[in-house]
Structures are given as C-alpha cells and as structure tokens.
Image (cartoon, rainbow, N blue to C red):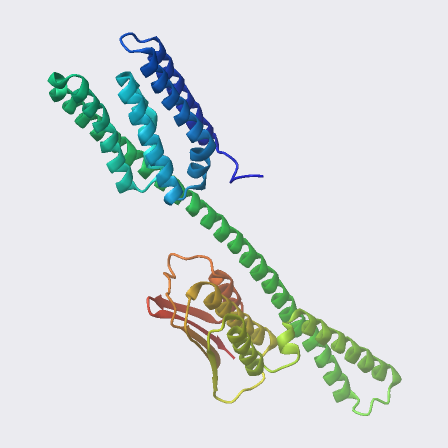
Length: 379
C-alpha cells in the first residue's frame, strides 16, 4: 500500500545525502582512536537508529509535509539520537550536517530554530564535561554553527516556499489557459452561428419575402399558375430559411421572447449559485432583429456565468431596458471585482466582438465593490 505521493528526484537526492553523511560519520567513529569500543558501539548504534528512523518514519513524514505531532516526535527523536552519538564520541558532531536540515523539513520554522540551537549546545555541554578548559572556543564554534545552520535553513525554507508558490501559480495559469481556450472556442462558435443566422435572416429570408411581395403586387389573385408556383416555392424557401435561423439561434429565444429568456437566465443563475438575482425590465418590449436579440441574450449568459464563477457575489441585478433608439442590458454584482484592463479572459473579448458586429458597445466597470457590465445596441 502506498504511503503517499511518488518520491520526487529531490527526495531521492536528500536520501542519498543522508546515507552518505551517516556512513561517513559512522566509519570515522569506528576508526578514530581514543575512545573505548563500548562508546564507539554506542555512537554507531545511535547513527544506525537515526538512519532507520529516517527511512522508516521520517521520510514519509517529510513527503506528507504535515507539521503535526508526529513530525515533531521525529525531530525530537533525531535530536536525542544525535546527542547520544555525540556524548559517546564527540566526532559524531559532524552529523549536524544531516540533522539540521531534518528540523527545517519536519517542524515549523520557530521550532526548527530552537532545535538547531539545542543541537549546537550538545557538543558544547559534552566538551565542558570532558575538558572544561576549552569551553570558550567551543561556544564560539557553536555560535557560528547555529547562525550558519539557521541561515541555511531559512534560505532552504524560502526556496521551498517559492517553489510551492510557483507550482501553484503554474497550476492556476494552466487552468486559466484552459478556461480561456474553452471560452474562446465557445465565443467563436457562437459568433459564427450568430453571423450565419444574421446573414440568412438579412439576405435569404428578406429576399424571399421581397419576391413574394413583388409577385403578389403584380398579380394579387395569382391567376397565373407560374406566378402561383413561384410564390409557393418562395414561401417554402422562406420557411426553410426561418427554420435555419431558429436552429442557429439560441434555443431560449425559440420558445420565448427576449425579456422572458433573460428572466429565465437570471432565475437559473439563482438556482445554480444560490445567489439572489433580480430581473427588471423598463420600457415597452418590441420585436428586435434576431441577431440583436442573440447578442443581448449571449451577453446576459456570459455575464451571469462570470459572476457565478469569479465574483463571489452576494447579489446580482439584471436590467433590460427598451429605449426608443436602442436596447440596453445592465448586469451588476456586489462581488470582489477585477481590473478590466488587466484581464483579457472571462469572455469579455467575445462579448465586445459580438456587440460590435451589431453596432453596439460593451462597457465594463469594476472595483472592490462589484462589477457592472452594460451593453447597448441601437435597435
């Protein structure tokens, strides 16, 4: 059974470093003169216990990256074993090179600093016990060692933190890129469908209507069989073109008027997000060109989607205003806002593009108090 994520190359390098230091110090302890076999055996056993503790318990704790009670227990156990090895053979002080990094990898920063100071005091106390005359130089060495160890530990901690922040930023950027690609694709597909619907409506449908009008003006009773056939054919093709426009237009407009479609989008937003959304219409609704209604509805859908995903708002208001010379859509939220000049995503470029295709303008204003998106189209 796996105990955590797969080990990274840096973890393998640390394991190798730990093993090399442990083996080197254990070898030095075994061959050094001036100490009894019993004390050498004690130091060697402590080094062996440190190695086993690291690979059996400490390594999974480091990989889990949880500064909890178990991690503190591992750090304290390593400190005790280090002290045991130094008391037995002072040469084991060289184990400091692998003990200090363990502190910074397992416990919070302040606790690690305390453990580093304690670890550097152990050789001083041991030397004081064995040779009180050399305490001054030992204190100087301990002070330098503690300072160097803390500085290195702080540097390592900072580098790890920056690496984690970069990793999180990369993940966020990849997610934003995927979201932007999705929105761009959807905007492109919607724009092309809207363009085709508008072209069919403004050319084919209008052309067939003109043909029918002209023929009926020339022969109101359609006594000429050929003219009657032409009118029937034109009407059939007009029906086909209208069916194509309906198929290319949003389904919400196929079964409801624009105000009703926008109101439904507001209600759906409230159901999906749990955030209350009010809808209000001013002026007298009137039939607008299909392409204009499509742009207004798409803008409402996109703005509400952005509010749900990014705004963290507590309320949203939607206004659809029919003005004698134009139609306006205003969507406000009280969310966290963003910088419109610095944000190119959120579908804003697609909304502006669709608005410009029908001669409209899209205005976005945002601050810490919320965001307002206003679309106005001459109609």
